[in-house]
Length: 375
Picture 1 (cartoon, rainbow, N blue to C red):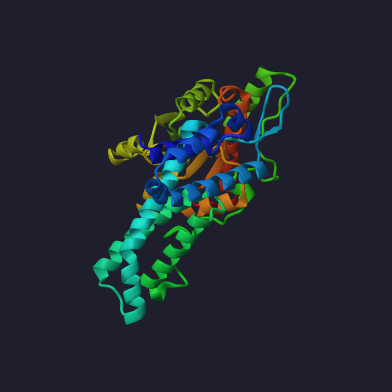
Picture 2 (cartoon, helix red, strand yellow):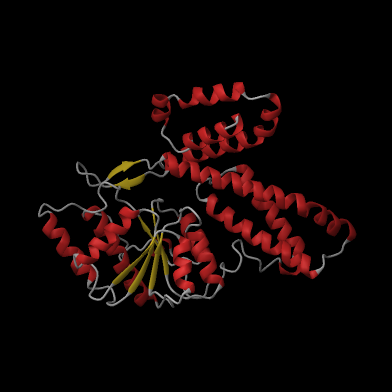
């Protein structure tokens, strides 16, 4: 592995670790050593990427400190803990960031001469060429919306998105008032966005957060069954997630009677498996998906479903904290709700995992009936 790749891998690994972990593992000196050993020619090629990674890391660290995720613990019901991704996820996220910026650089290289031509000659491209570049812009915006959740405030990413907006308007000069930020999904008519409702809070405003009871497991199980009875029976629910433990947890909740009678949980460890089943005729009443997965996450899934006018409700189950900006972006993309994964992997099988999850699903159907949502 050459110096550049080693540097990127280490920067990816460092990206979402707490500062004390960096000090303990002494990763920063390792990065410096590799950079020192890299030739000046390689450094010239890498400098741009290193600047991007540095800004992205700073952005993520600031957001993590400002938006702690509430993780229930055995000692305290609500102990604010800063959520950090593990090393594998960090590498995947930075790889996606790097790949998206490479795709953008290739697009800009191809489109810049056309843009200059359109601006200087006051002419338009042939329709086939316009369609080709519009399709590339759609794909890039899909990538940027996804990584924008992780690298919020990153200036190179913001500059790239501004360039895409400029390119879209140059290609479609008569659509300035109608081109949405996320193509095709901004002007929804099935419902209005209210952030608390999107995060599946109860109509009274209370969030589905686990509260420990002195009666223990029996009381928690009884409450979960009561909540489950308010969910429509006999549903086919697709669960798309790359974490086997989450599949195991949901299936165990169904066996314990936390879902209504006749509920079927169909598991998919990734988007390709779900797409293959859907292409084969499988249909579902509800789809619950993670946002970040190898080989395409929740954004890839929802983008293709809504392009096909599939009206099945799609809810994301993710570890992100509740933010109004996040609700707006997910809503624009076509999601119908978000269940924050508040329980850690160590407590997901217990009431910390199943009570907020079942209550969130109950709230979705309660809000759907109350507000007359179309899906």
